[in-house]
Length: 593
Image 1 (cartoon, rainbow, N blue to C red):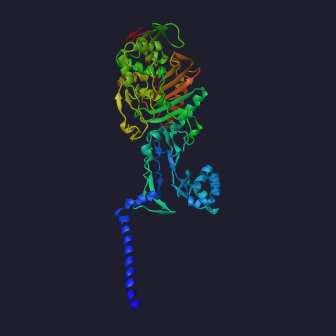
Image 2 (cartoon, rainbow, N blue to C red):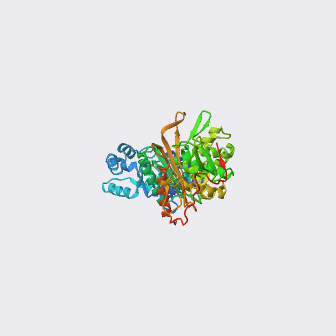
Image 3 (cartoon, rainbow, N blue to C red):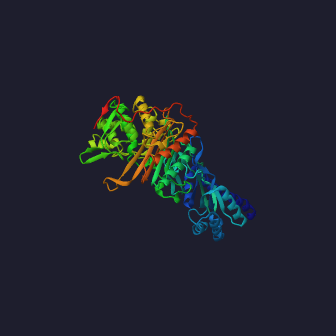
């Protein structure tokens, strides 16, 4: 009787205990999932939170027509789960070392890492072409290997190898070495986008999702469009490389500008490198010498000096100048290369013959501060801000200048500029006296230091009058005259071409004078002279035994001829009407030392 009456009591008591236990776990579950999710996350973190980066696809770098100069290929990273790979770690490491060219010992260590952080997630290889990875993983599965997976990992590719490499730059192939040079680095924020993150918790070999969102999707980078013409860039680079090698020069720069807009259609440095394999070349080749390394421009600057003299109303192209054999400034003596005795030149003749003395005499009609104002208005002494890293402003000494300094600066010594600055300055004459700031970026982009650059921010500033620009352009045509000028090798049949040579001495590194027997040669010009479409600047550095008319002028001819054909510019209708280069008859005036 007592035993039968106690059974219902014990049963009720059992249900009560079960209810209490379930209530306890239910309350704990509510606490973890609703009331205190952070505590759950913290507990999971203590167990070992895993975070996986989901790489964003990098934006392409495009030429002016949308052709990819730098692009992202479909790539994958290879990932191991050590819990699954450790049993056959040695064999699998040997297999992957052979198939993916990864280090055997490093891979073996990762395959065996079954404890601590990363015990369920080890990256074995990165940025491997997707087709290659899929084939290798299929082979691995066939051989009985387990625990290998993949994730998206785009590969940076440069389809044209060395074309525009000096301006585009390159990126590193691992997390420690990101964008290392060029536009890739300068505009990395725009190109890179934002990587995503996947978070999960592995507890005793199982993934446990957290209470919050576990995946942040990557945001791909935006493209960067350039003003560069891929075909013009390729041809310009090949032409520059040939002239540098032929003359056994140390380096060279060639620049092509749209004369009206200032767009950089080609920008070549030599030596250069293959952007797909930059480590195969010296680091000295990675930069943009045309913007980063100023030099004394030499006689090309005479076109700027004489533009200033004419624009200030101090002389005209046919103004007579008596040019002595030498010009003395105390202990300093200035002469003209290869000329003896006194010469009777017009101002146009001074430019055609590239007379240092004649240019000095003309420049003496200006105050040094006045000449300096013109040179800086042409853009010398200021960065162009086209978006190239490490750009130099060059040096234009503060005025007033000593007489000998004004003399040397007038013909391009004692002053420094970059080829890019000088190309833009000569282009001012081609553009009717208006300086348009050169552009490398089509549209607008913000550099790493916060500067907005591109065609959307290009400026136009009048430096000399249109009348002066027309006169100087006509004077520059005489430079190519077979009998009167220094650069007949720059002539292009069927077209009127204006230009100026430069053969500049190289300052001695010890600070004492100039090196002997070695020069920097250059040629700058535009065509068609009567309605310029393109301005081309070629500089050949460290030349022994040559001059601008022999080295840079023929390269200019090849590049300009290509541009005129490439863009279908019709030949010139009217022949040039050159100025007289010597005097003896009527003139608008004369200058004397």
